[in-house]
Length: 220
Image 1 (cartoon, rainbow, N blue to C red):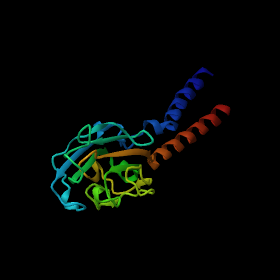
Image 2 (cartoon, rainbow, N blue to C red; image 1 turned 90 degrees about the horizontal axis):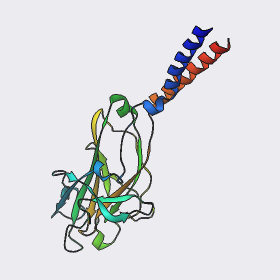
Image 3 (cartoon, rainbow, N blue to C red; image 1 turned 45 degrees about the vertical axis):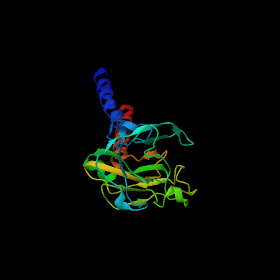
């Protein structure tokens, strides 16, 4: 009787490992701006208000937290310096591209989905000193996509955004284009969810099936 019990425990451990595969499976890693070290930023000046051509994706540098500045829910604002200020006065258009890069396996690239909310200062809110550029994002150099703010204010975390396609195996880049007025500019992003891959659920199901089989065998 001892040998079957040992065999059942060994097999049961394997089944439990499969059932808990959600914690072991590789998953997409994407950080909010609460971790400024995950972000880079490229800054340029001298361009025209509201024009994509004014933005530069050269000379990226490490992003830093804007001192003492959080969104209403506590998400950290980031910029190229601790104040977000790059000019003497309001109206000196400053163009930021905030970037995060991450690596995906082929399986992850095929199934990954990212949900987030973001905020931008200043941009496209109908006031002359805030400029006419509506903040946008793009994945892997694709088309620019407008951000959406239900309140109309880009200072607030915007509408829940889902990016569920366009990922590639290898290095991916997600860029956020924010035009500032030169004073106290910045960017904030709250990661809401990274949807687990379907293969993770398949792994869990396989584990549960194995556990059921072992339970029936033990009862028999």
